[in-house]
Image 1 (cartoon, rainbow, N blue to C red):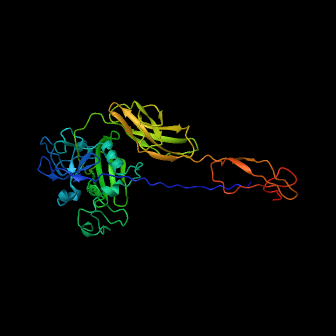
Image 2: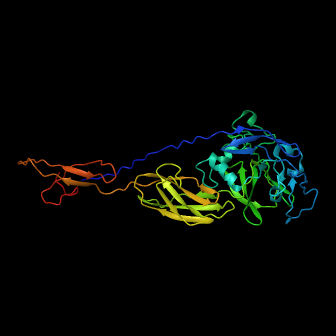
Image 3: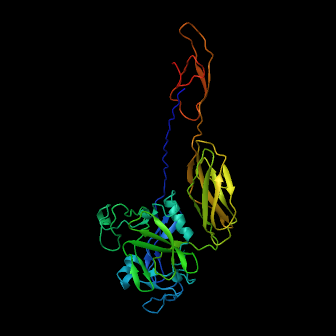
Length: 400
């Protein structure tokens, strides 16, 4: 019997509904500077770059113009890009990490410097399919002011503040976050990237000399995560609320690989322990979206602590779609990475069938047929009966 294979491709569209940002109160810092705010996914952010030159207790934050800081100084400072006072209102000041992490506080009362976790939560809310730096959050967070913006109208401008020209990766400012490309400053009195790059501090240290930052670029649709030296000057955005001593861990789900009809390999990485020991980490999965440690079809622990880990998820059903994500737990709670979708291939075999007994035999005809017990996982395209007068009949040695 001749056999054909037909692959059926079923495409599904995941619709994501997001809550747009909406305006909140006007915030005033110790110097009387005012800032707008916005709520995005349960977080409230100031939508302007910080401009204050005084700590909350009234102490002055020095400027390199006032004090010789040196390359290895750990004194907090602020600068204006190219020492141009016109940029104070448009782009805000640039601060080093020592200023933003100073216990005297730099944000208005009731507000604080975001952690790396805070930034990741923002990215995950805007782009639920984000994977590392591969996301579209940058486009939606950038100010829509750009040279020759395709959006037209007041969005298209060469006057600062605005982004450099890009025909495809222009900002749409979907959430009114209004990210602006204020560039950066190095202690060697070098300024760079005004109009093309927005750099924002987190208070989360990477190591002794570096801290985690978030960066948006005029030529990129995403917002990327990286470590930068603590002694350079970057922009600051404040987030509402007091900093908890312990936050949930930060966890990443890697892309599944080695997918078979009944298993796949999945990786994860705990990138931040939230200032507390990670006591458990692993993977949860199921046929419904967003599985949890309390609601799943499978869970597999993979030890504790920071770093990467890998497991093989097995015992799956062929042809099924599963959702899987990494999790990590500390004393604060459980955090989940972005879920990944895995569809196991259909298990295929040769069809199973039997030949019916020949009947109605005459001098020039007979009746027969067959029963197909299993299609082997694929659609049967052709079926019939072959015969010859020698035995062991096949499609290649038949008489009909």
